[in-house]
Image 1: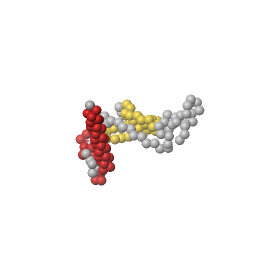
Image 2 (image 1 turned 90 degrees about the horizontal axis):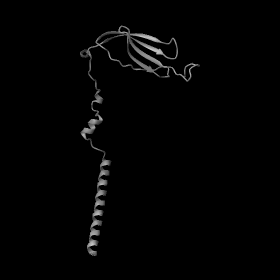
Image 3 (image 1 turned 60 degrees about the vertical axis):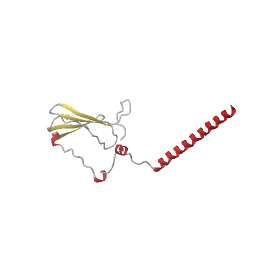
Image 4 (image 1 turned 90 degrees about the vertical axis):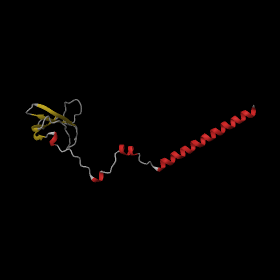
Length: 149
């Protein structure tokens, strides 16, 4: 969807929707979310904390900031459970049971690729050769100084 029809608005205006969760009984706002999507259908997730266990009758209000008369109110009835009533078991699919996290792999010290081992060995042998050449030059220099003396 393009911009809204607002000829007297100083800049281009796009449609925005506010989702409000309101407790009529307690006369307070529970949560609010701004939806900025420009498509025909937008999804939003509003998180809130249920203050106590028991039955609740709240309202979800969708308010358009660009057009009058599009606001929608929906009454929502739900029951908040006690901590002891909530099932907190986690289902792990059998195919996922063998997957290790990065931390587990790090702690297990899994074998590295053979290519990286051979590169390390090549680097070590090259260092040893350089050290032998350096020692040979020092020895030749020391012999030349003794011969000159």
